[in-house]
Length: 326
Image 1: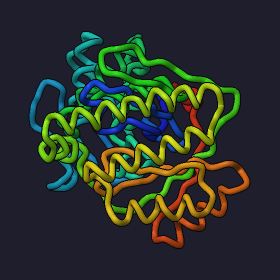
Image 2: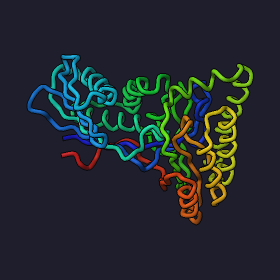
Image 3: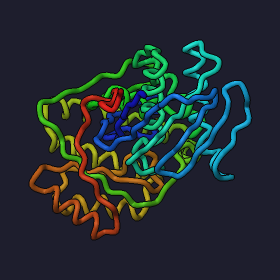
Image 4: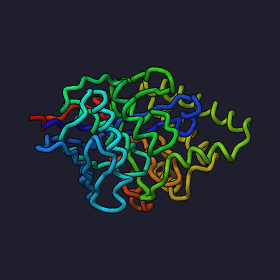
């Protein structure tokens, strides 16, 4: 048996424009997916998405997949592609195994649930097959699933999840890991409204002229670099101010919603240093930056405003093998 876990993530600044080459600041957080792989007595592969109640079985040499429900194919297909890629890299044509995936990360709300389950599955599968993968290779394989689900992803989700901590990310460059001495207290506010990241990213660029889009893009990039500097010198008040400024630009480009804005304003009134939507917008979550003395007030304010609050901390380790390995 081989097991692994991978964290969720939040984007502190820079979403949407990261796909256009701007930097983004992201953090791995302590909500997790967990994957385990056990051997099978036959040459059949079984995939179980336990929290969704979905299963599928297939043989690596055959394209047909037998699923537990008619709509399970969409959920199972990304995992099938990951398994096949890992088998190809391990130069294994036929094997029997059972991949079990469980996640506590809400789906479709901007916390990286798909990237987390992909990464935990890849790490568990590689360990099961004695395949040594670098962090870059894990991210590379995870992008197979990300492209299928999100169309044109930047790669920030799997990169953050694999490395852990807080990273400054830019497409085509190695991530820069930032490590201040004090941890941050983030409060997530979930609207409960799901959305499709790929569709939202595509729509944003359609609604702006080239000059205006470039101007906003460059401003978001500057905010992110300033936010990274504020984080490194532990100026969390300034970091919160920059998060607020970033949110106003996300409102301007039309990806926020009345409910997201309501949770943002409620968090700020309750004492958050800063608050903004996180991820694609159009629903999903906000992230509020809090000092310890205000976290309970912020969580109550989010709940009173109709959201579901989670207090989260930064996960410093990223994806790793689980103690459940036997």
